[in-house]
Length: 63
Image 1 (cartoon, rainbow, N blue to C red):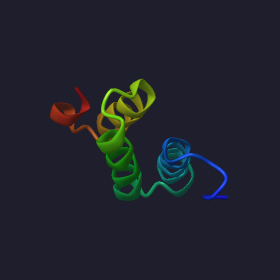
Image 2 (cartoon, rainbow, N blue to C red; image 1 turned 90 degrees about the horizontal axis):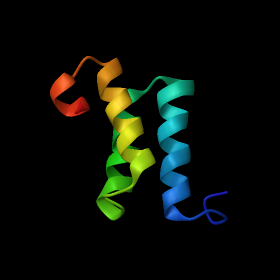
Image 3 (cartoon, one colour; image 1 turned 135 degrees about the vertical axis):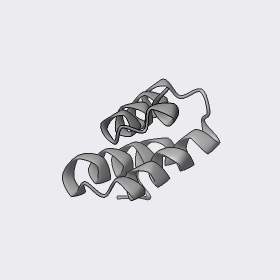
Image 4 (tube, rainbow, N blue to C red; image 1 turned 30 degrees about the vertical axis):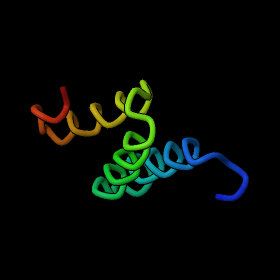
């Protein structure tokens, strides 16, 4: 599958998968960080990462 989607889509898929299905938040954060390194203004990536940090009550990073 990874060769059939763009990097942006792959990082979205990984982030959401790890965040919601696996509850492996460190891997979700890593996927979103990779996404935002390439696409720093990506609204969905920033929003998802902020929501993840808010869920972890890491308020400084959630903003």
